[in-house]
Image (cartoon, rainbow, N blue to C red; front, side, top):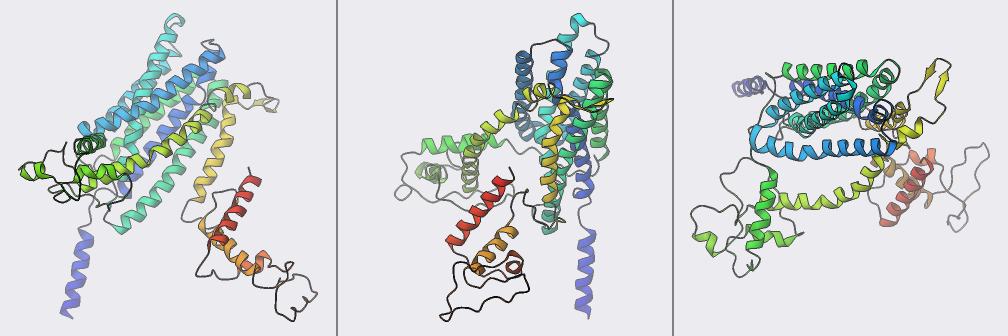
Length: 458
């Protein structure tokens, strides 16, 4: 009894010692900040070409070029902002600084479309536009990673909370985008650009206030150095040891010591040329202090391998970026040529037609929620659907067909063989339990069915 009471007391104490910072209590502020920031960004980006052509009287080709250059800058700046956050300022300070720059750019943008004289409006507008790009570029890479910092990697509960949080995260940013495309763009086209961009400036002010409200709840991490430095060290160390033979000259593998607590990675056989960076040769064994540009740990090498394996994925996204760039440019201008009136007094703004794509993304985001268990054909096909179809096909090749009519099915042949016409209806097959094993032919046919269904639904 005493022992059990002691165990209960320890459980209570451990529950009380749970960190007061981080978790959902802190991440909820970052979630709201991201929703409001996406509202502000897409309220500007989705209708920017309309302002350039209608207000600044630029040709469509010139306006499209300016929109794409501005978008490109806003997506390149995060590379430098992430380096600054990881190496110098930390994520919290970088988000705060970027939010201030973002807000200044939005205020200057609102002034440029309202009180600035026409002779200077174009210059001030583009200066403010690129200030916004710098602020948004500093904001983008840090908020999501800072939100991930609020959940402990070693806690099972925090891992579940993190998964749930990022489902809500995706839904939130798409919702903010949808509200901006439907609401702000209508205000910009029908009421005025001063009111529309003023709403975006007010939204960024709200985002900054929300971010500061959670300052006492955030779990902050000190800068630990840029991953780019690790990549460079591994590449240089591997190049300096390209003559080293692991079997003959190697004195072992360096696993790291005195490093901050990180997840231990397993050695892989891909990109083995980089493995030489972690081999301890004669020169390394004679040193009392490790040269990070000549000897790297196993974790560092495997992390670089992970980065290099992402390059094919990044390269495959280039065509997607080319296609998606049309959304904010020529898609909007083509939409302006359509008959968009629903009633005599209501006309859909051409840029609001982008909401069709946003609603599809919103639907896909809802299907990822843990509370959503149904399988929708138009959504990404999940494992549940694949298992069900595999079971159906297995039964169709082994069992007679179940007739839904009142007529009794014909008896099986005397040999017990199943004819080619006999199959299983989907409702009956759905009740069949999943077989414990599967072969390649079943999986291949399953994916054929999946591809046909996806193609039928566009």
